[in-house]
Amino acid sequence: MKPAGLTEAGEAVLGGVVVRPCASQEWARVVGLVRAHHYLGLRGVVGERVGHVAEVEGQWIALLLWAAAAMKCQVREAWIGWHPRTAWQRLPLVVNNVRFLILPGVVVPNLASRVLAMSTRRLSEDWQQAWGHPVVLAETFIDPRRYAGTCYRAAGWVTLGRTRGFARHCHGWTYHGHAKIVMVRALVPQARDILANPQPCPELDRGVTRMKMQAKEIATLVEVLRKLPDPRQRQGMRHPKLSLLTICVVAVLSGARSFTAIAQWAQACTQSELERLRCRRDPRSRRYMPPSEPTIRRFLQSIDAAAVDTAVGAWLQGLLQGDRGAVAIDGKTMRGARRKDGRQVHLLSAVAQSTGMTVAQVEVDGKTNEIPEAPKLLAPLPLAGRCVTADALHTQTELARFLVEEKQADYCFTVKDNQPTLKSDIDLLFAGTSFPPSASND
Image (cartoon, rainbow, N blue to C red; front, top):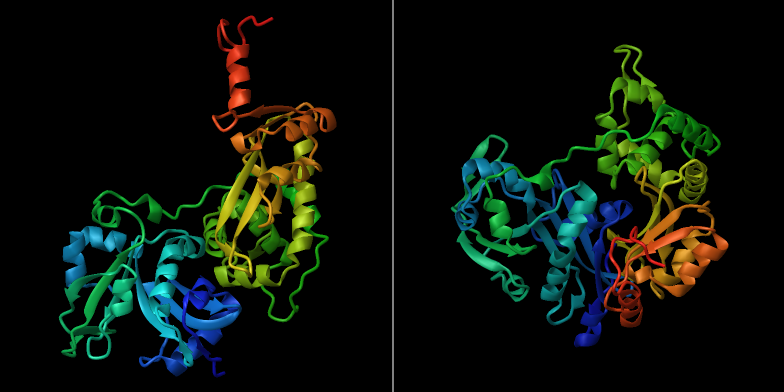
């Protein structure tokens, strides 16, 4: 499919550019365009990868493909100060810009450097979202016979030198004689220090948390999930719907935040845990088999997310009935997740502090903030006799009145200098008395 053209000048076009991650269903289109219009074509992208799409009002104007860094690069190693052992351990923190394509028919001054800067600005968070770890340095190799790297320099990239003219193939290294310009861009502060640190890298420790739920809780969850329909066709089905749903829900409640993390969590489960999760049993090995990442991804992309959210939400509220511990309000912007207009997705959650489980969650609309959403979040929860905690943003009279009068709950809010009158009243209340609050205070 030939892309539409865009030929304009000025800040009006540049100001409307949005760079976002390529969705899984768009990957084939991205690869097709790069193969058709990039001078190097594209055989494939091996290993971890992230694709970025730049668009203006929904029209695609540029594509960037990021993938694993080059195994060896002498000038890069010298610039970082890498010991070979450190380089091997921390290479996953470096990412390579394998392709950058301005689509045919798009002619806008300064567009390339603008898109490149926007892509690198969000790259580490998108990598964390997709692969469970950040990246701290981006690299690229430029053929000086074709390009000078002008847009990269304009976007803040640094030239390190040139390669020695070798290419890596399956059987080793082959000399081709065409030295490439090596350029890098730090994605976080102190990127060189992070890469050169000889100590083990906690960002690359992909250990997953153990199952946090008891057998009784899982049994009640299974009964709730049993009522949900299976969108898949029966032919070729290996893993039961109930097993996939249960694994995904329990993994997320245990801290998994991506398809890959869910799969890694399932792989780390013991045989007894996999049995409780209703996993398929291999008739030959007689072992319970966890689903793979592609299976989990396909299943979650086909399931009715709203129905799952409703069912799991009701189940969590049932668990909350017997829990008398505090509930915390917590807001978080989702890494890599954006709405169609390019704005990031912000979620407001209620977390049971005794278990760490999210018991309610709402999306905060881009036209408002967390304050008016807090009562909506807490309204369906059984909070009588419990304490609700929140940060200074939620220290609001209306929320306090809602909790005490409507929910028969207590609250513990933070007061900071952004509310000077209230802070002054508190100081006056405790003036001349001993503290902590257990001291006599008539």
